[in-house]
Image (cartoon, rainbow, N blue to C red; front, top):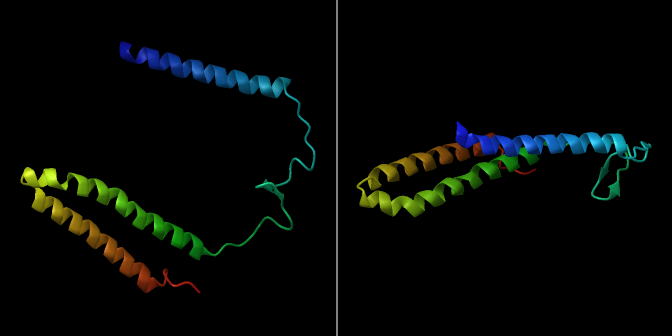
Length: 122
C-alpha cells in the first residue's frame, strides 16, 4: 500500500490544480456571450443553413467494415512475428489452426456483408 502513496499524491495534486484553474478562469476570466460566439463553427468556416444534415448509413457501414478488416492486421502482425517461437516450442500447429479459425470468421463476416449488400456503393 505504501508504494501507491506517491501515485496518489501526484494524482491528487493534478486534480486540485485542475479544479483551481477551472474555477479561477470562470471567476476571473472575461465572459461575453454574443450570438456570434454561440453559433456552430467548424474548420474556420461559418455554417450556412441548417446544421441537421442527413448522412447515409452506408458511410458508417463502410467505415466500420474498414475498421473491422484493419483490426485484422493488428492481430496478424504479432502472430506472424511470434509464430517461429511457437514452432520451436512445438505449438506451431495449434497457433496455425487458431489463425485459420480467425481468418475463417473474417471470411464468414465478409461473405455475410457482401450478401447483405454492404459493399455495394450506389
